[in-house]
Length: 95
Image (cartoon, rainbow, N blue to C red; front, side, top):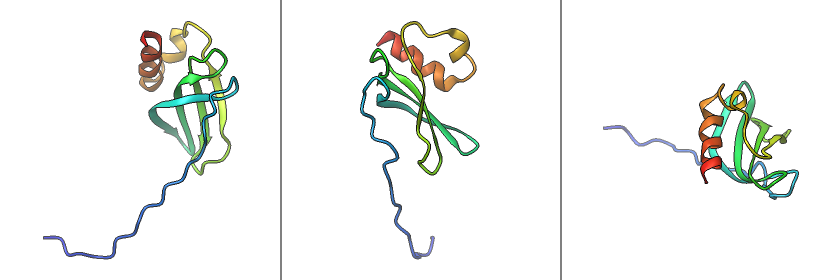
């Protein structure tokens, strides 16, 4: 049995509202990946042609940037380095 103790509540905060415009993604997908204090993610929509983006932001929610906007076929060398990008990219290509 674990004795009951003081439990603190978690607070959640929105770091970015995706607009889906040509300069922004829409429908974030596949969770976030981290490297140091940078979080990376992908979207299924938005970007230049509406087929998704790769984005990054600092772990504290600042510094959001769109790193890449998908515009057609996705280069294998771009997605082969990380399962994270590969799984999202293949879903985008088949969807």
